[in-house]
Image (cartoon, rainbow, N blue to C red):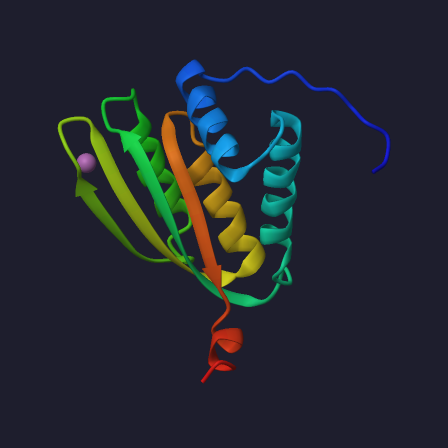
Length: 141
Ligand code: NI
């Protein structure tokens, strides 16, 4: 390991409680090691595909549609990037929560960038991109 840096992270108490249960279940001795593993995992996961490789992907978003201007922001973003988006599925889970699945196709860097913007939009509670390269997938057949 190289030089160590200490960081402070503000985190929702409930979320931290869930994280602590999760890492205890996984056998971590402390939060630092668990955080490092999560960060490494995330970095590796996003570096596998070359920036110009053709990929398909889905972004799954969970959000509260009462959050001010959030549905509009997400729709605007999708219209701005219509050339990368194949389809969007929207499900109203209950009175507050929405599930949106956006199907993407294009260069890895474009898909990744749009996914990052959707997921990091303020008010989105949970988001995840799953990316696949059709050429790679074809190798398995
Ligand atoms: Ni909805």
